[in-house]
Length: 420
Ligand code: LLP
Image (spheres, rainbow, N blue to C red):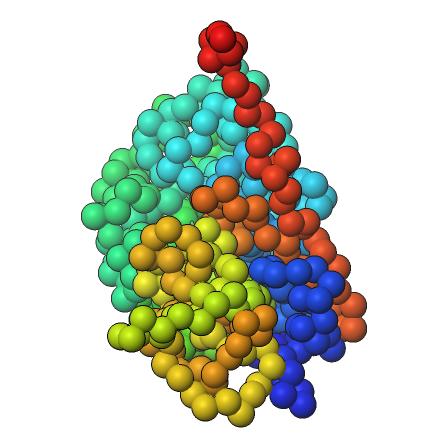
């Protein structure tokens, strides 16, 4: 379900006309639906109610403060990967006991900050990292709670760049080494290893790879238990896929029906880290047609948004549906929808059939709520666009469009260039 629908030929987000937002804020911009965020979050919550998991929204997917606050108010915790994300979570007064911290490269400053904050646990990805956290915790007179991220060596059918659970990837610790680590855990007096973590990839549309990974973990947990090694948490990561085009992803309920029996077998408290599932279809990117170009071979629709604003098509060849914000009966034409950036990879969609559009018409790039704004950049000295949240009839700019002053802040010409 999402709350971007056409009423009388006009695209609405909840009860707000998208064209009205464009009028007020200018283009391009990201637009998020409060109702959709809440709906997706509660779908997971309800589907897994039986085991009452801690649902830590993977804020790398969308770190807008208003989005985070919306989810925290529904009971969400956060899966973070950096000092910046932790600061944002604390800014909206997230409960530290619902924060888990992944990343293969945590710095000393980040570890100190997270220990001071008192997060639920670190998801640790290597032995050197465990040694480092132990050393820092010792210095601070603390015991660091840790879940070991295991690499279950399970292939998830998704894009190469976003599969993470095989030994070809940099993530997690292999099962044998994890076992060794747990056996020698007394070597780390300032660490409490109280959980295991898996995350096998992103945009996974079937439950089979999850089940395969969880089954491996169940066997492993049982073996550990037999050796007297008890744990408290199993963090099953994120990765639930959504519909971009014609995917038929499982619903939260189907997913829960399939994996719940296995999760229950673990006897552990469950943590989940969904990102895309919650926010992906809760956001769109709105851009305006600047020019129509026909080079005799191909037609291009040149818009004011670029790959610096939404890089998924360029980076992963990802498909995002593109729709005119106002439906028209114009004769359909096949076009490439491209941005103004000096790269051939700067496109939102290729060979799309759209009604004939003209300069000034608005287009919505759908399903852009996850890994959209967060992956944007200032490439070509372009200001990052605003993020706007709709709730019912209301909307508000939750992050302002950047200014050129923002872009040049901190830059200076060194003295030695000023010799005349
Ligand atoms: N937990 C961990 C440890 C992760 O690395 C990720 C995503 C998640 C949870 C959330 O996964 P999700 O539920 O959103 O699939 N930029 C790429 C996606 C990268 C995903 C990175 N890790 C894209 O635009 O498709």
